[in-house]
Length: 629
Image (cartoon, rainbow, N blue to C red; front, top):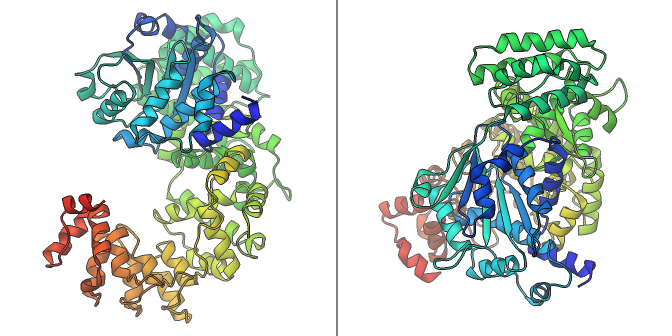
């Protein structure tokens, strides 16, 4: 098989997969000569050489080096080959990713399949079998696991590394291991989970698990600190290593603590004095208090730097993007600074200036332009101490200012190619559009009404925003192309939104609804699908002042869209029980709910289905609905 054909096959297996970016990051962050204790640990050795490998569970608090250890293990496996080539697949679970059942491993497993197939030689007959498959099965199908085991049979040993599995249940693990290794069959996978938590008790009690606590070993801490200081300040402290190492190791207490980015021009005596102050202030404290001391030391250097605004803006975005499951990249960072109105005198900042300003605080991948925070401890401290609600408000204001730009006023792109070009040239666009609504769910800036009027004053701006919010994330050109080739999303939005539609879409507060109505906006205006703003508001989950405000302003609760759906029929499937009660209390007619809608209600909102039964409505039982499906 040619490389071109193989590349096309990989695109089908897991479109937009970013595992290669993660593997490059693992190599980038690896400290030369570190983490060999993990390979020498008897439990790891037993696991590596076992014919029937148990699950290896590496766990420890944040910043104990779990990712470093995963990287070292992956490198070791690839360098230690037998008669048949070994294969390694690495998956990073994002902070927002929970694993409550087998379905929650779906994307991770498709990434694993793609990574393993990428390591097959071009002469493998399995590649031809895969190409001939009309549809690649998904992990909810037994055929997927048969395919996974078929691919694994082409290798010697196959190692699967799941990093960041901090929210996994015993039942999810049980189902995963059974799916990959059915009862009665031999395991063909060496599986490692890295987590902040010990293995789930229910799983560990009934399965063989090698439990390895993660802790930053003294030699690793020593190498980390001296390399970091050398990278940050260009100071080589190797001549003082002997007298400093013991103190640094004792204070670190098994953690890779954040190191302040002292200025390059600092003298060696001044640097040693500053380091000594941190050590003195940390002695005898708990791990959390030591972390606070070092984080405050890092923050002090930031707030006394000429780069303060840049650093905080970039770190805020890197952290928020990671929480949402995205990778923040340099082109996005440069436009974020512009949106936040952070400038270098009258000029925009350059990538080189951002890298220089954020030295010692972020990893920058020159190949993929990704930006990741170095210290998870400092990231957590920033979220807790610095990045308060005012930052969220500033971010929302910047999003709306950016989205209101003349650049997007001409309307949505009219083709897949045109949208790609727009996202290439405006790398912050998809992120600002996607993150606006979640941000507004947490707070509303004081300038929100004025900012909203500006954004919604031009129909083109509204539709540009809607299109970008539904577009694939443009995290890299290759991943975007794969996503769009698999499913074009440039038309995945509904044209015809009025300002009130947009307000409902954003779950706007009562103040904005009242302002728009007072300005004369039409409550019964319809989008292309015939929906009014009330239809959109009915989809809001949780508390719903938007729906209440629209009803109080006079919205028609009986309005029908092009398919005959009323706000009530929307609410019982997509909304909340509170919205259903509000609509019924203001004249909505439950008798108009058809059988299909009620069946969907049973599947999607069982609590609403129960409430409707209490009202005497003939709602099918859940087992009846399942039989219909």
